[in-house]
Image (tube, rainbow, N blue to C red; front, side, top):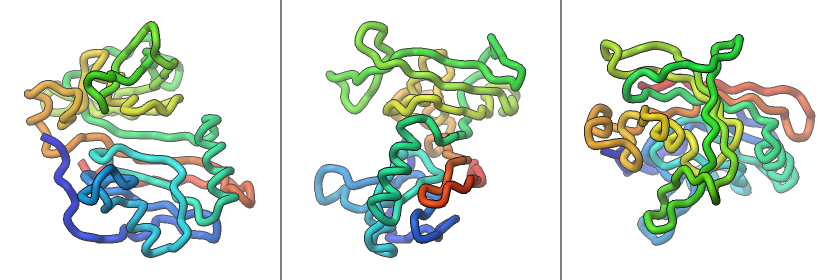
Length: 224
């Protein structure tokens, strides 16, 4: 079961706004950018640009994922923010609820474990991605256990992707045997039906203001 499609044209109120960037919360079920075809024109970027003409896309979230997205308000800010995301200068944190409870080993002093599995497009089944030891690009996700839930049948995890591959968090968690609940692409039928939407939320971003160099941090309450 995937997240429901958004049917209104609500523009999320900005969590932060200055002359160079704005940050909004994307609802689950809303495209980040337009898809192919007129039926996929409605998206967060179109709504943001209607309210703040000239706003520019910096990064994306999957349609089924909710949470923080940053938009630049002019081209120079877009270039600097894009470079920050590309060079891993942005600290991104997600929260997910997964099937079962992953075994945390090895764990560093802060409680983080890592998934290091190369990812590539699964061309016969696009837009799916897959673990590919031959053609895949290096991909790393750090994770740590926040809590066991549902009587130990599921776990709430904090995720920190060090790379930004398509569907990285979803594929990595499925690959270690703990798909995200509600994931219509990568979870089995039982895990899909345990949630009404993909239980993945972009909960925190830390970055540098692109024109002034001051540190910024944004947090979004997890809606599940």
